[in-house]
Image (cartoon, rainbow, N blue to C red; front, side, top):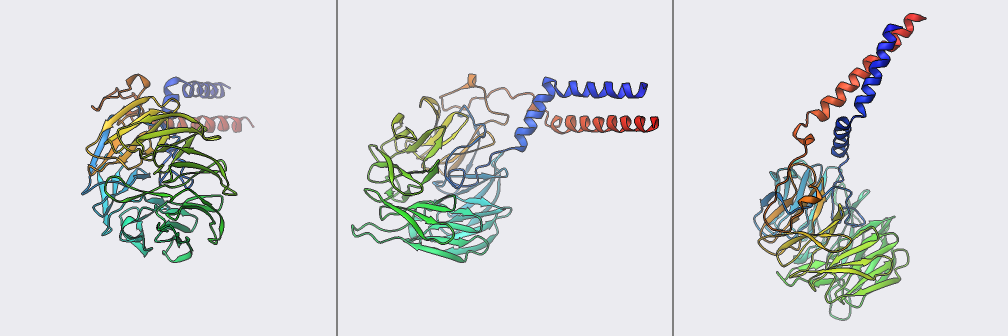
Length: 452
């Protein structure tokens, strides 16, 4: 009886210890470390919702910067603690997400404007040579490449769903075999009679077996993802495309699919909400410019950037304007996390706004225009700039508290929590408690067996 009582007492002690604040902090930190919400493709996921459950920085502190050989117009993606981003210097870069150290580069022989998709250890991307290619995510080795004829304005970011890679080309949407790049099917967009092109530089979104995209011919399309059969099309007032006011390169409006709606901007100055099943117009919002980027949807609000120098927040149900924030230039595609909406602007700045009110939380002045859409992972915001750099905003610890908000452009340091300073506790404490628990159970069973 004495041994059994000691064992029971030890179990009680361990239970008390496991419920103590110190252990709960370690347990919480360990859970966050193992449950990271990565951002492996444009718009975070195949629907382009642009929302992450990750924590995100509340200040403009730079964790690191990395300088490429030319402008960074593409939006970074992050998977397994690696940032993948293209540059106008013709290279795809793989950077350590925590330090910014370059892991490898791949020369594509053409500017890389679109964003990569990282799926099952493979990086799918494209360049303005008209090629879509697949790279080994570990070392950048080329696995295959296919010419889709996109020409000098290759902007369509590949969407990888199942065994298919969906990407826009010169007048067509392609479905390629993800394993070898062979063509599964193609869909040809009608050539318009108004003199516009029919190229597809819009980045496809995929939801419930349907591929959604826009074309320069002025239509939004919905296709069966398996067969490429047209399900519906919607004619906007003008092309789903707008030429950049900066470098003369094309930037595409890409669809976002959420709760049975397709959200997309057009050069006609309207931002549309369409029924995802029928293609009928639910509402449209007229702004002073063009919705030139992929939108983000979170908590019943749809956010989009326009070349009229504004970021807009609309009620996703009826399209009514909740607020707008005016910058000194066109606004890039937004990203939302931690109650903050992040975006770039051609006024050279990156912004973080309160997602509910549009109030500025912070901004950061880069060296040139920012058309890259921010991405968020593991508490860090990543974005490219035409000053040739990739920026990582965050701290080496966890997300800063609201008391340390800053709207200046000078990095602001904040005290690091005690747990990250002792990472060994994340392993040692749970392991020690597990071993002791097993020992107690074994002693308990041994004592019980001796009684029989």
